[in-house]
Length: 547
Image 1 (cartoon, rainbow, N blue to C red):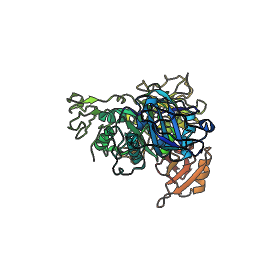
Image 2 (cartoon, rainbow, N blue to C red; image 1 turned 60 degrees about the vertical axis):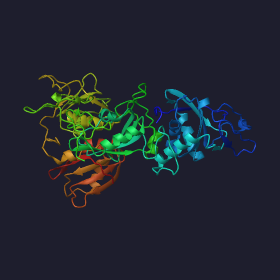
Image 3 (cartoon, rainbow, N blue to C red; image 1 turned 180 degrees about the vertical axis):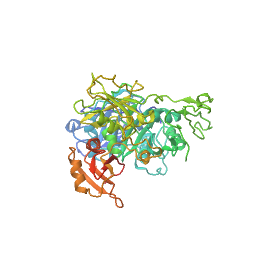
């Protein structure tokens, strides 16, 4: 594909448009048609233009395009809103016409881009309704653009190549897109945006990454500059494990050909736009993109530290990918001494088991509530709410793996009505207050807590770690407790119970769905280890299931 598919953002300007290199037909009988040269050297103003200024049309006029922009990039403007049925590039005038399948799609597109002032290749562009209702192009003069349109349409609809269609190397071929959709199965350890970047950048320049959780699975959309790179990455990485025996990559081509990234943070990144804001607590995915998106080898060994193998395949990517644990065991060969291996950056050292949690609700948060929530992802050893900054706290996990897991799942979640931020702390331990010093209960030691979920080796809890979700898994329910009892109990946490289901064979367990993830988080904090009587304490965790 020529050039780079950068983030596309557009402003609106209304006015008459010029047309070159095509025939346009209009429903307005006062308008005439004209055919001119494809290079845009001749142009005519259509009669009746002034009568249709601002009227919605499925034909859109795009101006101020960068001279090096490709057809694919222009088509990508419209794909999130519906099918693009025609395109005309006027490179001599830095303009283009884009025809949508329906007027409704065009209106949605214009309305969306009215709210933003985006750029294409770091240059603002402008979009408006055309004064014409249909775009008819001379195929002989517009052959390249039509080939690209057919190819991109094939990608979007996942169809087979059109017979007789020839697409230049710069176009997206029907078999693939530069955007990959990545699903992580068996995610027992956290997978960060930086880890994905370092794995996938081995196959070519990664332009953008968006991570998100869908159907209780960690997923990512990742865009290369060229679909060939995406194809190589898919062939080499699909089915491989990021860490030993877990975090399996499931990779498919996305129907999208371009990603719109709004923020550069730990959930999304546009590597072509370092100027983007961090947008703390905001959705990383463009709403239009979100709407349109309605083999036992190991890549990284173990998450305590990761080493990457050099390329060995003649095709430019490895015939096999093997990564090893960096922490050397006495008597074993340290991977650091092995030739040709390079340590990956962006991964916490073995000492970073302390998390800094900020933007807390300082009127409601307690060490116990943080222990309960973070304890879903590891055994919390100590918690300290900062004395001079009570909206921040230090949470010490058992090890770096648990700290990374808690950080990846809880950063950006709502707790007591506020979106919390979770990062690695520079501290290696949480210091307890000096003996005899009253710190108002802000520091608590949970080292010997009986509520640790993961202290027993081989516990099934290791296999049931899921992102926060509206559905909760309840266990250790005594026989005398009914569905209504549990619904009332969870309603008293301030939320609303949306669904409930006992397990068929075992009424000691059930699924309960709240109306939102925030309500479920609150319920878990309040009711995990709740005494139900009969020597039964309720166990609450997040579920990947829905009711």
